[in-house]
Length: 411
Ligand code: SAH
Ligand code: SF4
Image (tube, rainbow, N blue to C red; front, side):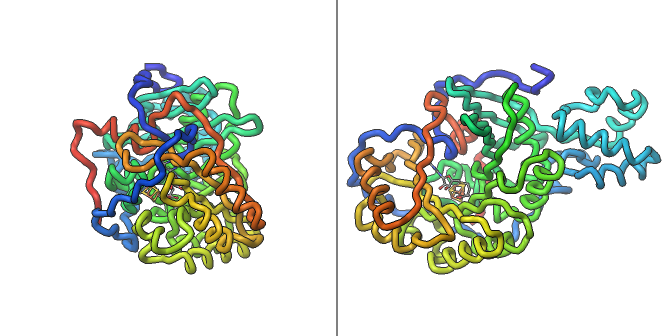
């Protein structure tokens, strides 16, 4: 194993899949496919899911987990061990600035203290079990935590920034019909430390890249894991040094979470997955839409924008023949006009396990975009990345889970 990265080996590129943060080229497709009936049980979305910060994720150990604690907490903990407070600051710098994966690396701590730390705490860094790298520099990692659960993380170098797409849950309880993560069911929430760990791991796999942006758009619905999410955002700002404005949280439209986040005092960017211009279609795609319709979602998005002064991104996953018609573009334009938000078109990324969906035809996608722009909507389109490492979010974990027990779906 490479000790500096904890990386064990490459996953064969042929293991296929897709990543939600990585858009592949659209393929010409017959655009007349109906949406398959959603036969899944409705997801329970109101449940406050158990927060795993101190409970299960680190397996048997009852020792404190240090990755996920801020400088002040580490100082207090060190003082409790009758050590000087500044040792806490040193440890924080080792974890968040220098990406240490073991106490042994913390060479400016006395050897006796390092030995003591090994006995009284765990660092809490996950193992990087697999990695794929595309020619354009996109790197996809499969991280496995001590309890054996795995998530995916993607590093996306662009000309002007390097972004990391992180997961917030193992699997997802929401159950969107187009999403490979949904097929995993839901296993558990990630802790704040596990979310931050993904950024640290991605950073260590990008020598020379300075990670500047983080998007919470991997596996899971972040607003169903609210407190650890907010702790992770604070850590990414205060300890890792990222600007709040460069952190983006994507939600499938969990309205109470959106409203709460609006008042959290963190100027992070909010992205809301719309994917349909009307409730009838949206409810067929995103089970959670049955609880919070477009009117309340758009209301909460506006509140977010007013409170934070940030434009909300309305994500529109373009599914060939399902939501890319001209009438739908007109409907979407009515919804999305105004200065509080802009629309981000995301051509559907083919997932081998979801064969009933198609990427939009390029010509149709172009017309859809033009119809929005003609009506005064600000539109962006997700850039194609990492085409040959088409494995990923949800999909890579699905492959990794093959042969293991299926994750438990809560419904
Ligand atoms: N649960 C949150 C965040 C994670 S999903 C949410 O749904 O917003 C992040 C984004 O990836 C969502 O907009 C989701 O719709 C999108 N996505 C899911 N499957 C995809 C696929 N096959 N191709 C492209 N984007 C996809
Ligand atoms: Fe969960 Fe988002 Fe996938 Fe829907 S799209 S199942 S909310 S991860």
